[in-house]
Structures are given as C-alpha cells and as structure tokens.
Image 1 (cartoon, helix red, strand yellow):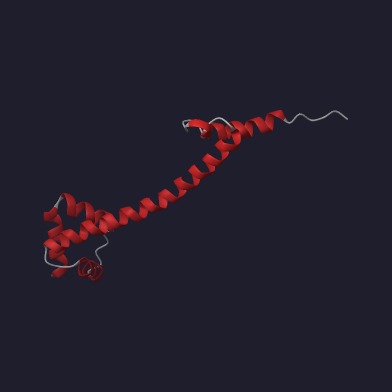
Image 2 (image 1 turned 90 degrees about the horizontal axis):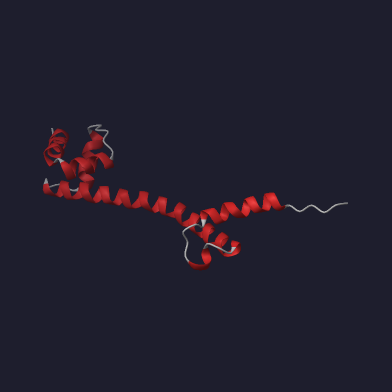
Length: 115
C-alpha cells in the first residue's frame, strides 16, 4: 500500500497559524511551534481585553455622571434613583455623553427628575 503524504491539510493548518503570527517579533513569527504558542496567547488576550474594555468604559461613564451630579449638588446614586423613579430610560453611556458635552441638557434632565 502506498504511503499517504498528508502535505496539503497540514500545510494549510500551519499556514493559517503563521499568517496570524505575521508581524510578531523575532522567533514568534517563523517557527510553527513558537508561532502557535504566541497566536494562542494573543487570541486569549484579545478576548480578555474586550471584556476589560467594557468594564473600563462603564467605570468612565459612572465617573463622568458622578462628577456632573456633584456640580448639581447631588450624588450619583441619588441621581440614578431619581431617574429610575421617573422612568427616564437613558443608559449610562448617553448620560455621560450629555454630561460631558452639554451640561445644560444634563441639568434639564436633573430638573425633570426633581419635579
């Protein structure tokens, strides 16, 4: 029985990894074994960083809303409680944008919640 050379499938699998390792420095982009380790780690860090970015952005929004509410003489938690009580459906991202770019509108939202 003739032997099977298996060149195509294995080469395709290796080339996929080496293509992902393009741009890595030193030995991390040429030898397959090291490139595979580097790519695996890089993909894991990308996954992890996407979640950390969401967390960091939420902290930034809360900080901005808190700073704006302090200027109005209230706390972040009391502002959010008042918004929930009045059924104002603005998320933290939009509230932070309004607070940072148009403070008068933010003040109007706060006045609405107090009435």
